[in-house]
Image (cartoon, rainbow, N blue to C red; front, side):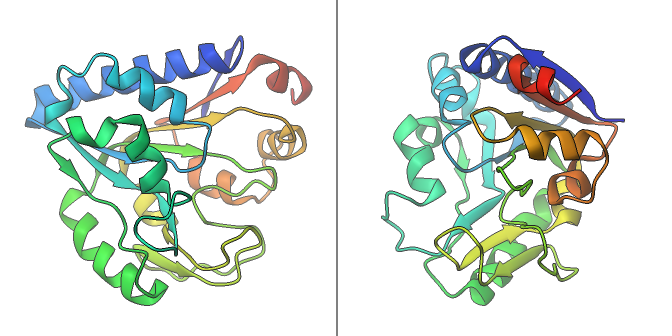
Length: 222
């Protein structure tokens, strides 16, 4: 059963997310000496990443992976890896594993499958949710092949070509944390809580999943 946690505002959400990620990291490092974290793309988690870098001790045992990536040149500022790099988080981790999405989606999916396979199950998967209920680059109405990493064509949000971890890989985790913040997500959040068939519902319907959501959004989607 997914756990829902209301946060006062976006700042409180980022603070709580950073706290939970650090707690998961401490548990993982005590268990097997490292922390395998899947990073969410987009702008919502960036504040959390910045908070994590304010206390860099312990980050040297972290391995960073990505839930999805846009097929753009490696140095494009709209790449998820570029946005994360600006926060400084990768410079403190022992391993940084960006998706090689500058290649074609099919080739990048094959290469990233080889990267993530030894890391499964992840210690924590961090995700967001879009206004249409998508998560990572898994969009409503799309067929997702049953493979660990999926090449995405014709995404409804630009760029249309992307690479995404598949549902099976995202769900292969000891903990999952979904961050829901920002305007325009009330309808998707209401549908998710009602159990409608959205990508985020399929991925995050797990007992080890927690959803951090701004309180005003949670109040509009009881």
